Image 1 (cartoon, helix red, strand yellow):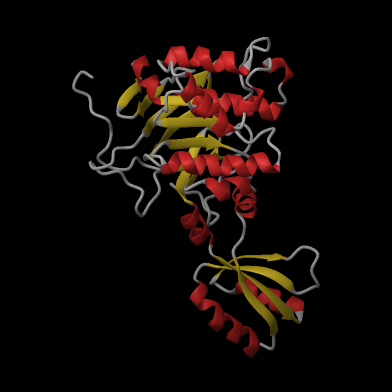
Image 2 (cartoon, rainbow, N blue to C red; image 1 turned 90 degrees about the horizontal axis):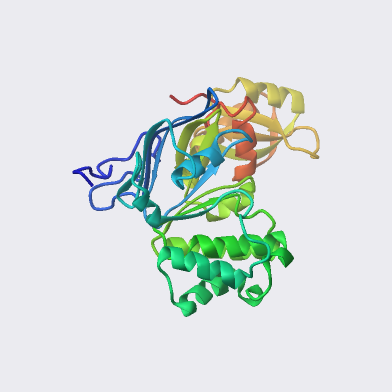
Length: 342
C-alpha cells in the first residue's frame, strides 16, 4: 500500500459525537474523507466525510437530489470522485486501488439483472467473480434473503420484491466487510420489511458494516445505529439516533385552558424549543419541545401562576419521521435544533 495507512486514529469530521470515534484498536470498516463528485460542471457531492465501524448500521437521509445515491455510488467504485478518499477495510479505493472493492458489496437503485437467466445463474456468476465456488454457501445466502424458493425461475418472472431479495444475496457473496444498499426496502411488503430489519441487524451482529439510504423513516429508526442528514450535496451532520432525539429536545403533549393565553406564554418561554398544535385534537392541545426536560415542572407552575390551567402534560418521544420533516422545512438546511451546524 505504498506506506499509506487507513485513517483510523480519530473520527472524521461529521462523525457522531460522544463515543463514535475510531481509535487504533478499531479501525473503521468504511472511511470517507472530503468526498467531492462533479458532473458536467455541477457539484453533486461536496466535501462529504464520515466513517462506519464494523458491526454498525449507518443510514443516509435527505430529500431527493441531496446526493445520497451519488455518495453510495462513489463508495462502490461506480463513479470517480473529483476529490477525496474512500477507504474500505483499510484499503484505499480512491484514488486508484480497485482491489479494495473486494471488501464491499452493494445494491444501487433498480437491481441490474439478466432477465432470461435464473436466480441461480446469477448467484453462480457472481460467486465465480468473487472466488466463492461452494454451491452450499451460495444457496445459504439465497435462503437468508428469502429468494431460495425462486432460484430456478428466470428473473424475468420475478416481482420487484423478489429482484430486491436476489440483488441483496448477490451483494453479500463473499461476505464483504462493507454492505452498501440504496433504498433496499423498495418493493418489499410488510413481512419483507420485517425480514429485512432482522437480516440487517444479523449482518451487524456478525461484524459487517452496513451503509444504506432510505425514505422509509420508520424503518430507518428501527434498524439504524446512526443517521446522517444530507442536503444540497453536503453531509450536514451524523450522529446516533438516540443523540438525534436528545438534540431535538423532549416533547410533551399539553392541554391548555384558555388555549390562546397558554400558547402565547409558551411561545415566549425561553426553554421552549418548538410549539405546534396537535393535529385533529381539541383547541389548546399542543406539542411542546423542551431543550431540557427538567424544566417542565417549573414551566407548568409558571403557566398556572399566570392563570393558565394545564389539564394534561405527558412526555412523548417524537418519531424520526416528524423530526426529519422539521429538519427539511427549509430545504434541509437545519440541524436537529433548527440551526445550521458548522
